[in-house]
Length: 488
Image (cartoon, rainbow, N blue to C red; front, top):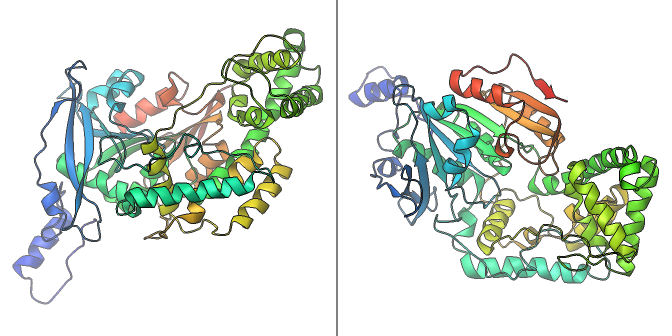
């Protein structure tokens, strides 16, 4: 909570003087009388995170309220970790980090991010990771979902839509039967509140922050809720905070069409090497003929046969033009009777991550339609407009059947807090248009766009032309004078 200033009265009581001084003096904990004050006083017990892990990689547990509206009630734990700053003399504070999801555990982020950050940054900050509430080692929740129920994308077909509705309903029912007492409290705003308790327990007046993917939205919400406790904020591959979660899903489709068009032009210019078509139109036709063939006769791959919808579901790969093209060539050859193509990478989504993801997506906003027919019509309409992936983002999801409406309104991010947004031009998940939406919401921010940059993640993916801006901002607090585009 943000400290409230004392009211001016004709007689200055001791309490009023104390409150006035508190408003002027930097504080690390919470105001006297704040029910969260007791959480700030807890003592951390730092221990080596893993018996065989790095000696300087330490973990601890922070107790936080399950329900911030009733902080004296039930509690849960937030698991945190740290790698201490390299220089006691240069140390500025802590750099809290989140890997997105929502639902991705972030406890290992300090050791994962340490080699990706400059020595100057590592000298100045304790790197702090954490598993968000409900995830990983932070009082984890689960729904006992099957592998099919943990899948997020299902292409629309008239013949299978009834099954899709029942799957979505089953996910919601299972989650509420298993963890209905906790799920309503797993929201972005509550995770931001947990971050502020962590700040206080660590004895910091303000925290710096690095957020990736959904972690950019979490960071933006923190800046809105606790602007006076925010220091330097780096948002890597940003989401548009003005979009409801369903709009984010549907926002993947137009970006996928742009990436697909770019790929057809790239492959056509290299027809001698790949043989997919001498013009962009020919490459496009080759791809859709492959999809149509796979719908009739699934294409054999090392990971199992793929039908046309399964091939379409790999739309995110088109941002990586050099990597995706040989795979399309191999699929085409396999469809024509050649050897099986390499299997598409299959990402395992845990039951825990799925539970947290839907808790946040459904609990952050009450804007999800409740009528399955709305999803059907949207999927048909989006597929017609964006053939590659329109139906995948628009189809029915468990939030249609979530048993509890959002307890708080979605956060409107609209502030002047300084932040640095770094963004690849070709990102299939946090699209360039979404990052530009984040930039509009954070008026004090600057944005560095990596022209031609491919994939999800800038700092998180390794060296890029944005690294200098990131290092300069984190070490000096200086943002670029204006939004920049680098690379090419």
